[in-house]
Image 1: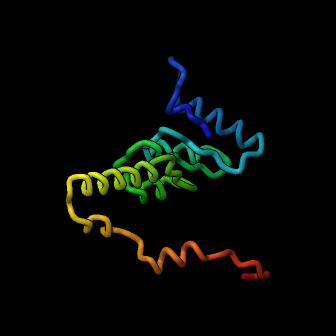
Image 2: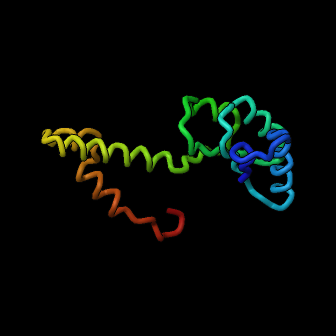
Length: 132
């Protein structure tokens, strides 16, 4: 992971430092690099086009950029960091506030996974047979 765009040293080009780290990681045998804190698809595309390997981006911070733009910028992956967990905790908090204000239980069912889908998800086991 190159975190230059999160904690960049003063007076140095973040892009140049990210490039140096990316090249060093790939030369050391990395399969992929992950860029944190950079949410500019044009700059990500330039970075991806300038290194000899796949580049991913970490979206730990809120962003208004559509996922498609990261795909178009040739990102190998988009890591969510803690964003998905924070989203789920926000939903849990809102449902708790609904109940605490003596509301009804209808908000608990909004977007909930069905019992059958939950059973299928929890009981699903990876196949141990060859080829399947």
